Image 1 (cartoon, rainbow, N blue to C red):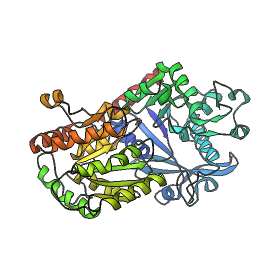
Image 2: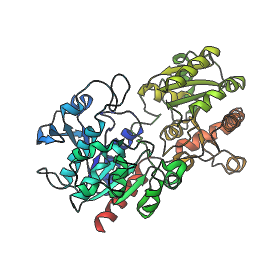
Image 3: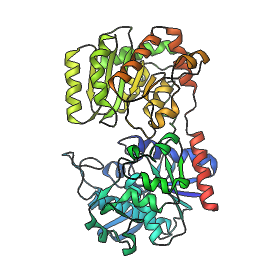
Image 4: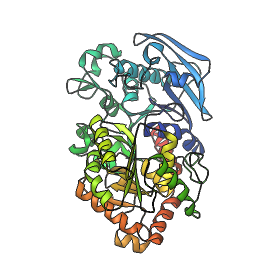
Length: 476
């Protein structure tokens, strides 16, 4: 069975967040189930420098631009790159320019990606076919809509990685999308008087998936559905929650080259070397007390304002913090202020460093994730694998993957972390206090670490679930 997976990023070629990890891991996860996955990516400079394949198709006019398809590989699996220099050959980020503002032609860039995907799925590119088209997030979500309005029998899936990002644009772009007039309507691409890329995909796809079962239920409610809850509810029978996995070949403390010392659940004492490395990297005063870490986009969604409100109290309780992330300028400034107030107790690194994120998981004692909503989350899974105990808000995939260390769970020896309800300073502080109390009992803390490290959050179960979904669609 052949699947075309379409996305705006995929690890290890190009990454801004968890979407890339998922898209990069899917081909290997699906292969044991007889699913051959081809990934379609935009031809960003970072991708083209790693792909030297021959051109297999050309367009003189793909939404107003010349483009071609290049054939390559991603971790040994088939890759197709949409090389359209006018759309993707530019300095800056994937979605925004050097000034941090979204590219004004993002609608055209990703509509072209979706249009190319639909052409491939329809058999319009010689030598390429698929049974199912799988579109990830708003950047690829127009692909099922293109299939729908071309009356193509190929089945399609849209995965919502974060419903907050929807790809909404002014109505004036609609004539340039190359869709029939009938596509402009409440059951098509029109969304609150404009064009909604994600909305169009959700209306057109044969199946919708979210990246955790709890998130699939949450987005039926207005506070999580971000304006799309009515459409999701209307299509509830087609919605499936499949929790993300992590790649143990990349995230394994036993053979991770980014760590100062490698270890397993049986050799947890070796984590102390990584803890010293974290202290050095973040200018923290050396000590035996707990180090909490945050590896996150600095945004309201991630609850960073609530974390900041707790930092003075965290230090008073004997905790230290090592934070790696970037985002909202006001949050960045507040974190720098906290670090200045507490030298040696709070260390902040603005930006992202893949190797340093691994070291933090391997050396910090606990990772704090106070998200107001979290479709799945991957950092808590990395924390489990590395014995970096997760402290999480009870939402989305965080609720699905962490067993709270309450009295019953500790007694039954099933706890893997700490959960709290309501993203408020009081709720987070109570969870931090609970964690510090358990940390004071080394045997109890190490038991939580070992249970997390032995949990299976690989892609095995998730790959099987996606394979079953694809087969069900193709046989329908």
